[in-house]
Each structure stands twice: as structure tokens, then as C-alpha cells.
Length: 471
Image 1 (cartoon, helix red, strand yellow):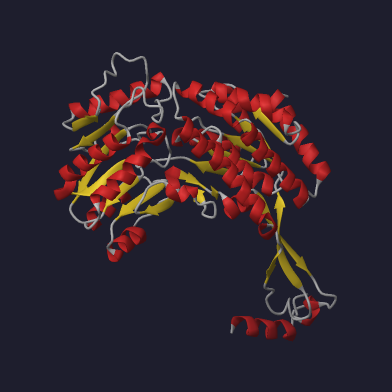
Image 2 (cartoon, rainbow, N blue to C red; image 1 turned 120 degrees about the horizontal axis):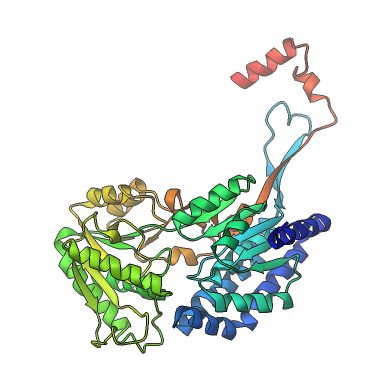
């Protein structure tokens, strides 16, 4: 038996021995989880910057430190309400003589998390908020692309948690493959769709329920009456945060055909305003690896070769070729076609294509021609147009008149659909994802089966029951 399998088995035995996990125990784990992140915020931020080559410290504090603690605080505040028994209706004749039905949300056991590299603290701790609130224990496979951050987790976690409460695993693809094949009571994977398929296959061998948080091409639709300045400012903020390495980043803009050039100009102005310099700018993050940087450059070259116009937003005229950095300026790509690589795959970097549409139905058709996106964004004041976009598209989530922000609302489910994922967590939805909704029925003392004619030999009593039920 592998070390991972031994760890999972020991954790499951500890869970079984400790049942039921009281709300007090759950609150204590949540409190310790928040303290672990808060107490070591500086170490985590230093590690994140080391892993990325440079990562904005302020951004790390916002997205990974404060974001993680916010999710945990939300769980602490609402746990008592989430965990309440839910009364359910008992149909006639079962409920006629005092029978009762209810749902109890019980912990599943040991939950596995396969975490990504782009937000390697938040996308561990936010799921843990729901996992611990539900009364589970957790094992986490950390990304091999953020080794310094992983080292901090491995170092500090034993100071806050016993090994049978929370454990971390490190290593490459082989460790990830072994981890996905463990018989967890639930498994959460965040990452690329292609890898998600392998995780799903591995989990199927153990009938492990799976939540997949993937990605896809999240569109930003510019409505006919949209304020372009406001839309551009918010799109650029979402696209350039973390250098576009966000599963919910706006992947492409859909603008009215007659406003494409204007949209491109205003996007350039917005980007230059936020990031007047890039190479030495402490607020702008690097592309995480040489491989990711090379892929983005290849896709930009492919677009140029196929007829696209590419504008590099480099306000200070910096020499990126001479700089020892993976920082990449925003590339605005116009005249895009579907045969371009950047229109076929999730970009995950500071490259922003602008596609065009004739009318809102054409925009909807273009969105629906692709796989279901994780996020969808619409800008515009027209309620009818907005409603048409909402009614005729399917996506994991939606932000109106902004991008990405729905993920920051702890009381909203976060999840995808189709190629962008399955299942959801955050807030009460996370609590329920990582709980088992167990149905409980308590029969009355009266022999309802006999009174209702439900017990053979069947006769007049059953026929009376059937007439009542069939109307």
C-alpha cells in the first residue's frame, strides 16, 4: 500500500472513530485554518512571488490571503443554520398518523483536493471552508508548479492540524494520478479540462463523487448601449489580474461590429492607465512558467499568421526581449477567426481577442457554438437584451456589468457546467457538496401499511388509497 493510501486509510479510520463530528469541532478546525493562513501570510506571499517569478504582493494578499479567510469566516458565521435538520413533507397515508420525515446533512468522510497553481492558497482554503464545515477531513495534492508555496503548506500545517485532520501531498503528475485513484469519499479537482477527464476516469474506479472546476472561453459581451469606457476598465482589470491566469478571466470580447475599433482603443487606454509600466511594476504578475509563456507567444504568432491584427499595450516602450522576466504585456487581437489557436482554447494569459457580432442573437449564437463557459459577462443597460443573453445561454456563472466578481460572493455557488466543470461549492453550496443529504423517515406506532391496504393480500383498502392518490 502506498504512503498516500496509508494516509487516507488512517484518516478515514480517525473519522469513523470520531463520529459524530460536533459543530464545535468543525468551528475549531475552521478557526485553525484561518489562523494558519493569517499567521503565515508573509511567508505565503513571498513563496507565491518566488513561484511565479514575480507576483503582486497586494494581489496575493487580496486574492489568496484575504479571500481564503473570508470564505472561512462566512462558514463560521452560517454553519449553525446550514447544519439544521430540514423537515420534509410526508404524503398520505404515511403522514396521516404521526409519521415524520427529515433530512440530516452528515459528513462524507475524507475529501481529496487536487489544487491548481494559479491561486494555490485560495483554491485550497476556500474548498476547505466547506469541507471542514461539513465535518470532513481532507488530503490535498499541491501543484508541482508552485513548489515554494507547497513547501510553506507542508511546513506550517502540522502546527495547526493533526495528520488525521489535514494532510498535504507534493509531487508531479505520477503523484497526482495516484492521488486521484484513492477511494476518497469526495474528490475536488481544479484545473484544465483535459486533466479533469483523467481525474474523472480515475475516480470512477472507486465510485468517488467528483466536483470538477475547470475553465473554458468565458465571453465578455458588449451590449449595444454599453458604456465602453466602464466596460473596458472592468474587463482589463479582470484580464490583467494575475496576468490573466484566472479560470474566470474574460477570455474574449464580443463587441458590436461597428464598435470593434473603438473598443480596442478604449481597452488600450484602460490597460495603460492601470499599468503605465510593466517590467518593474510590483503590481503586475509574471506568466508562471517558461512553457506557458512560450505557448502564449506561439498562439499570438499563429493569429498573426492567419490574418489577425495584434496590438501590444506597452505604454513605456519597454524591451521585454532583453529583460530577464516572464512578464508579458497585454496583447489585444482583432480580426480573429475561429481557426486561430487562441479562439479554440482557453488562453490563460494576457491575450485578449475581440470578436464581433451583428446583433445580440448573433452574439448568443457564437457563445452557444462553443463549449459551456465557466463564466459569462454582459455589459449594457438594455434589460430586454440582458434578459435575452441570460435566457438563451448556459454558463457556470454570470457577472453583469463586470467580470469575475460573482466568484467573490460567498453565498453564490461557484462551479461550471459541461466542459467547464460539474458540481459547485462556496458557502452553503459547498457545505452541501461535501455533505451527504441523508433522508430519515420515522414511522408512527400505528400500522399504516395495514390501514392503507399496502400489505398483501390486497383488497378494498388499497383500492381506496389508490383512488385518493390517482385523483
